[in-house]
Image 1 (cartoon, rainbow, N blue to C red):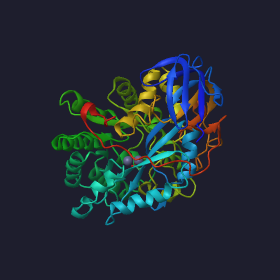
Image 2: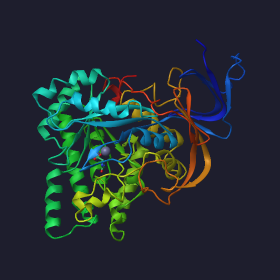
Image 3: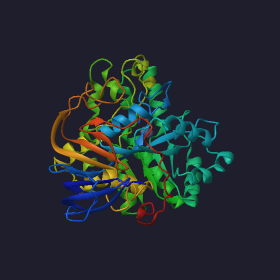
Image 4: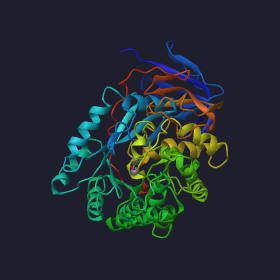
Length: 474
Ligand code: URP
Ligand code: ZN
Ligand code: ZN
């Protein structure tokens, strides 16, 4: 069979640990070499040479928290696996981990089959699944070894959304014990469900129905309490845990305490919206605040400062998007009469790299190596995809972003690829953008145009989670 070679020449190659001007050699779907001057090697005549001068060469982004085609709160997230992954790859993401959500009283197998069905033949980039467990009992427990063998090696539990997705603390603890025995990682949406339910009922009783009351019901105190409880259960189970979409200092405090005082590993993730948008968005006139109704909600500017510092200092390991789009017109407006009926979530899948580059790297909050680490390498490591994904190294998949560090843009729904009628970051200025993207050695984005057929994306069978060093075994 004919082998295909590509040589990316003269770009600034940046991984979590390296930063040099040089070349990357690709054979078929994999990286075979990287170095300062590979052109001097004897290379095949049929090789495609790509001039990467002036561009940054990053590993493809790994977004470990997305919700495509998710049935939720009486509707479905507006991006499916085709539109959502087109938007993702336009923004430099080449792998996602979506959540296969078990319906209560249904099996895990049904959830995973449904999600395979949603993604197969549609996704343009590679994808994996977390299993979101909503009903853990003696019967579903028997399914876990098979789930993990199938490459779904992380489990998500919701400590919120009572009566819909939530599991109780007993289920959660037993899942953590099981995860430890089987080599999986339990990830948690940490909020205090009872406190939320009580406040929601009180607000509605007082006819306080505007989007602002969503934020007032989902308190930082409640997120802090649930994060503490999650970590306590994880310590009692003797197994690390992972906090998704962490938003505030109240929660961060417990993560830091676990890592420093107890030396118990807890991973945490935050999202660009929690770093860049604040609670004042809920005070916008009319119903506009509904665009940012998500759980947990946007917090204060002080929380943002604390999150940036924690990212820099290593207390937060990953940046994901929690992309969960609902149209403002026709979906968000289901909650016009009551904030409790606004579908929770917002779009963001295509803006992770340009926002973090502009407001993280260029504002000197994080280094370029740290940028790659939190957007690519750490999510791949923690979730058992490294070194195939998340880096540029011999043997890794040739998932590569050629990034123009000087391109200036303004985010707008008008130019966004996602299928949603607004952008959560409308009007944000960005510097830097992906120009060309490779996925497994094939061009999927060329000159900012998506050139990949639907269905190119493959399911990523992930490795088991193994705690030493805190990361999945390489
Ligand atoms: O509001 C959010 N975050 N919606 C998506 C579901 C979740 O809680 O992650
Ligand atoms: Zn969540
Ligand atoms: Zn989510």
